[in-house]
Amino acid sequence: MISLATPRMVLRPWVDEDLSWFCRLSADPEVMRYIGNGLPRSTSDATASFVSLRADWKRNGFGLLAIERLEDGAVVGLAGLSRPSFLPEIMPSVEIGWRLSPTAWGAGLATEAAAAVLDWAFSSLNLAQIVAVIHVENERSKRLAQRLGFAPERRTVVPEHEVWADVYRLDRCGWSGLPAAGVTS
Image 1 (cartoon, rainbow, N blue to C red):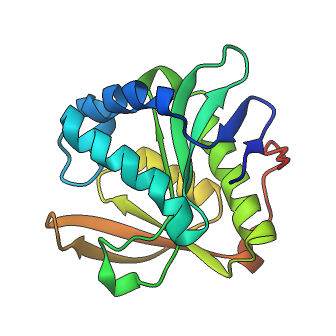
Image 2: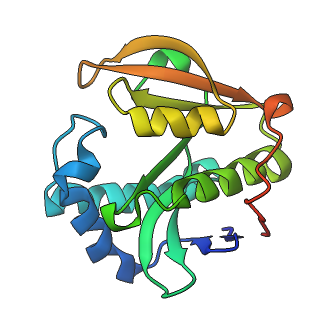
């Protein structure tokens, strides 16, 4: 597994001690508003998600990483890559995702983490393109995707939850990086 470092954080593999934080994040209605069916997750559902996201690494060779803030060692979010099997029409795509604790919102951490993930995806994994599937009402994530260079491709319905989502796409040749990323692996 990999760890990615930026000036303010390390994106690292999950450890067992992260489960309680992940369950709290998954139970937060504001955080989960645009994820899946838009509802907070129970502890058992969040635990199952945690186990699954850790297993993605073995299955795909990539996955989501914990975002640990360097200044205080706090886990403040997650970012990384996954297979968006919930949207069969775009498979076999690779999706970038990010999710932060409300206490970390507005500080540019999602941008920094996503840039680190994109650098890794395009340079180390040699992926040709990445998608971002974003709930149509999630304006903050749409702005972040556009700041990173993603272009809107289509609007569609996620079949499992019957919610509208916008699909954004970024090709490797369109990624110029962000100066603030400062990524090392």
